[in-house]
Image (cartoon, rainbow, N blue to C red; front, top):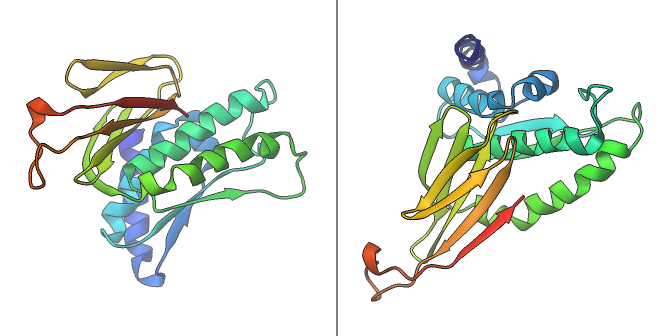
Length: 207
């Protein structure tokens, strides 16, 4: 299913590539059922449109795709995972769809997620140094010569995963969990960083 989704999205994006400067998508029900598609769709659009085209993703801001037996808080754990997975894969814009047909329970609980995004914006905008995607494990390393940040998500609804942001340090992500880990690197001199002499402080923010 994932392969078919990827290929179809890439082909359609390529066909429309000459018709705009910015491209976006919403797939609320599909992303809720399979959060991994949020990242896969970024990859497919990028393959069809090229490296420089902005990709703006719309996410469900009012519970349009929320099943009746799922609480707003439970639903937004899934949506948050979708958002950070898309960012890890390279989405350049995050938007939220809303209208007046729904009561505000979901949107009201979405506000802290938007505040988190705003607080983390400077990290998200840093250069991408490395990216690792392995099934439901999604990791990007952002940073510069002074510090590095790891943004990670687990798109599995059932299984926990582990990541190793630095040798000897292992972190566990619960199903649908996201986090940002900051590794602060101290320079040995002004021109180089020596890996085996790095003094690091880890601050883990479970988003």
